[in-house]
Length: 325
Length: 249
Image: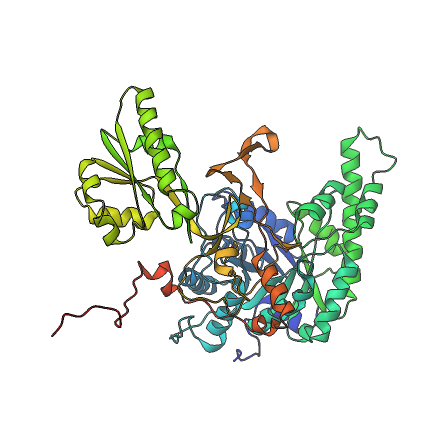
């Protein structure tokens, strides 16, 4: 069942994708404080650059302003949020309660995630929830929207929460051969759009997309590729060595390393400037390449603690101005 | 079996209060097999408490006794005389034994000498690993005999999640030896617990199902789990009417 205009949620992101545009989403991490100005400042860098912005939910298991609260602030600031919700901190009651509140407060995109384990964050002695997993969360969002049914089966009286339902995918996590099938499960559960883990390994991603196309998943869900500019070789190596599901090929590391060639090794500021400029350039090229892959519907730009990079990236990739739909 | 490990002696000493006659009670089943609270451990614990109390200058009497199973009334009935003489019991049983003991001897003060850690398996000599969480709704038929409830860090029902790499989970286990975290120097010189790798349960499930040509078992979306049979339904109870002894009519 859809709304009268045939849209599931009526969100800007949904409309952009429906109109056939190449979508761009960004990321907004809420503050580790109750400060609304922090959100306003970040919105300043992102407004007009992206179609919607992911508002993270206690990312890396560090306590921050809730994704619901920060999403509402984003709405007030005139940028569309993709509210993230993890299975780590809420059981099915709390999840559904927040879906209702989020819809009532103007949020129209919801991204289902299992969530970083609490041992990574600043409250490692806490207890996690994991009443449901992200797959089941997607199905719950779909049932609420399309069947007007709570997870328990009760039929809702009154306005149902209508979200454009998002999910994550990690194409390079292991076992790699199972990843397209896991995506298929998320699509079957009800994912309208997918944002992938950061991609630096283009050949590996192309192989994944080949499988995805064989299963015709790209026709049933909009796949946004996760991209992010490297700040320097150290970041590339960290991603390669310590972040599961991300591979960074040697030629990528070598290229960013080479950017500081000829610069006085003692001149840290000059090296950093050169690396960052190259990081943005490489990311622009990657966006242009993934744009040509059949089945890719957009990019999800993750400029971690580097929001200023979003404009040059999106502009450089020829994705400005963003469509008004 | 139920796996447990001994509490540090200092902690046990801290809950003895003014007791002068302490009975250390061992248990002859699970905790004997995992070498935490059997007859030998009870003897050693009683001896350690005696020596420690003398060193501390407040000598106590500490004796020991071991029963086949502390979690069953009939075995506890057999040690009523020993319990009677004691003014405090250190139970070296699992949490079930400690509670059964306290219920059976309501006038006595019973404290635990072990931390009950999990339902597990002896992996190799001296190493035990958790295998089951007693969720009350076994899904091993779907997962090829590998439990995601007990062995996946996030209890994911539709795994593996994106944190799986080279067969390992991104979540590391705190390395403990004799129950105590091993501390190492971390970033910035701050001391922090050392960690060790954990296998990704869902990677194991995937590989095993593939080997048996049964990946079809996990291609559908697994519905949300009914946790009422787990601890979440409150303390659980089993009633087997066929076994209940009826008064003869």
